Every structure is written in C-alpha cells, then in structure tokens.
Length: 351
Image 1 (cartoon, rainbow, N blue to C red):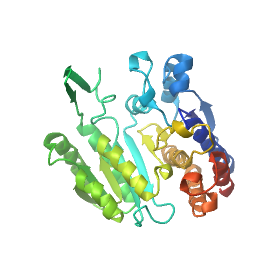
Image 2: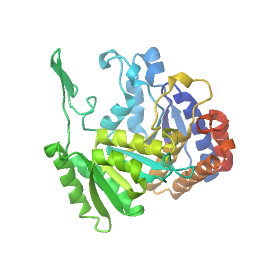
Image 3: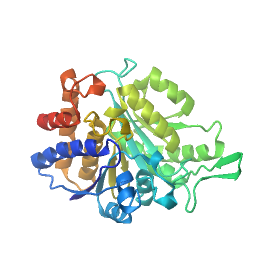
Image 4: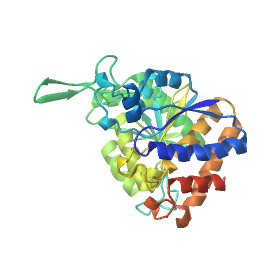
C-alpha cells in the first residue's frame, strides 16, 4: 500500500521526517507493507513548478488510499491565479475529505486548567464560511463596494448528516454521548438545518445521548468542565476554533492529532501551523503529526480490514504516552531537552 507523503512548509519537512522514522519502525514490526511516495507542495513547489499544489501531486492524491500532509504556510501563498492553492482546503473539497476528526486528550496527566480532557471534535470541513471551498465557481466572499465586504455561508443537509453520522459512530465506541455545537439562536435557518440533520441521525443511535450547546457556552464549558464532553460535532468554523481550544487545554496544540477523512481515503495532518521561525533548527515537536499518522493507520485498518494497522497505531500512541510521562524524554516546548529527531528515535525505540 503506497502512502503519499507531502512535507509542506516551515517545520513540515522536519516533522515529516520524524513521523516517517516512527512509521518505518511500525511498518517493520507489524509487517504493514507500506511504501512512501514523497512529493513537494507548498512554497518549494511554487518555486520549482509554479504552483503550491502541482496537478501531478493532486492526481497522486486521488490515487492514494492515505496521505500524510505536513503543515503549510498558505497565508504566504500568492493568489490562486499565480499558483497559490491551499493544499488542505483543496484536498477537503476535491477529495471529499469532509470529516476533520480532532481528538484532545491530556497525555501528561491533567490539562492546563488542572482538569483532564478526553474528547473528540468532529468538524465538517468542506462548507461553512470558508470562502476557498464553499462555491462551485468563484469564492464565497466579495466586495460590492470598496467599503463593504460580504461572506456567504454554505450549509447542506447532506454534509450535516454525514458528519453527524461519523460522530455517533465514534460515540458508540467511546462513552456514547454526542454534543452538537451550534448558533441557532442567531443563525436560525442554516444552524436550524444542521440541528435538524443531527437530530435525525441521533434517532438511529438510541444507545447514545445527544445534547445541544450554543457555541458561546461551549467555549466556556471547555474551560470549566471538559470532562462533560465525549464526541462534539459542529460546523467548519466553530470546529476549527473549538478544536484548537480543546487541544491547548489538554496540554498543547503540539500534542493533538488530526485527520481529514472521507469514504475512500484519509489524510493525516498536524493541528498546528508551519512555524517558520524555528524551521531547520531541530526544535519542532513532531508529536501532532506522528499521532495524526497513527490515526491514519487506524482508519486504513478499518477501511481495508487490516487489524495489524490498528495494533501499530496503538503501539505508537502507547510509546508517545510513555515518553511524555518523563520530562527527560520530552521536546523543549514541553520542558524537555530532546530535539525533533531525538524524540522520534525515542518513540520508535519504545514501540
């Protein structure tokens, strides 16, 4: 099975190299039969080939059952007509990777508030207010005059139903509770449609509990009572914001895995950005991308009936938890002394 590997910008090449070192160990130990296809995207690809996402790379992504995507610095990209394409957003829409699944778990005991966090946020990531992906042609924001800017929000019943179903399926394997986060008190029609579809799916999962929380309250409750939540389902923008909050509360954005999943393929992607200020210094914490890759292995194991993939994913998770319990085997951002490569070697050695 060939996995497409796209290192990206900034610290992307370093943490991707670290991730592959761990995956190589998993590949050998569990006889996974994985191969890597490395391709350039982002600013290096723009300089070399005139696009941050060359057509050949997009075709390789369509053919791949799994993708490992390093962080990208898309704020530095030129306009689309000059080669600037956000690979993450493009993959989500063109490859139908509608479900952004972001676990937040306190891996070093308790979270930043002294309370343990163990929840998963399910974010529909192809619609909403995200202007680069919510239109068939053109973008979802425009200026009718020089002093007026308008943004269009897209919500469809189909995508609401799909993301709700993924959340309930996960909840059935966890603590059987789903929290739907919305703003229906203001956005009556679009958020009302989202809640309608979530409630319809909930009826098929009578063994799970559904609660509904307004997004304002959710932001506060994550601080006050994170243990209340299990699986959280919401739209694109709310999910983007709340997942960063939950991950930081659990310990650090650098400890949060993330995948973008569809029906036919899955993409592992770190939750954090490209951190160009520390690029090339062996300082970056690769945990997020390593955990994302473990999630990809688990997805592939389920999709292709390969239980050894799930065992490999669990081995990676256990190795990371073990290393993080000891300050001596953490990266500098977590109070340790290990660099990017040394931390990856530590994880591989503990598997």
